[in-house]
Length: 73
Image 1 (cartoon, rainbow, N blue to C red):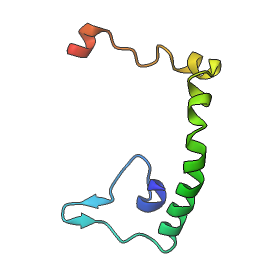
Image 2: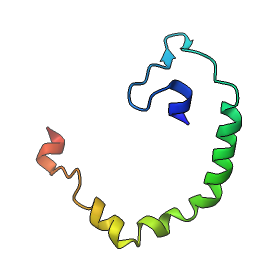
Image 3: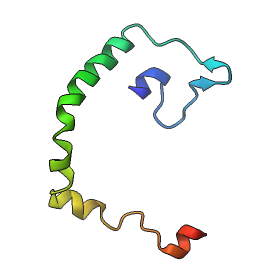
Image 4: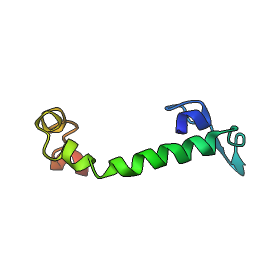
């Protein structure tokens, strides 16, 4: 939704001092409402997809680890 709003996922140039680059495009609010309507019912499924999922655990454990000394620095 953010990419559809501002035209980019990584290079954000939408918010400006005093406002935003342009108004939302026609249909964006409807698309956002549709996305939220679909997201909310699926939100309850997320813990089962992550907490007890062995593949998720293997892919995420130890990634981006900082020891205490690195974190303080």
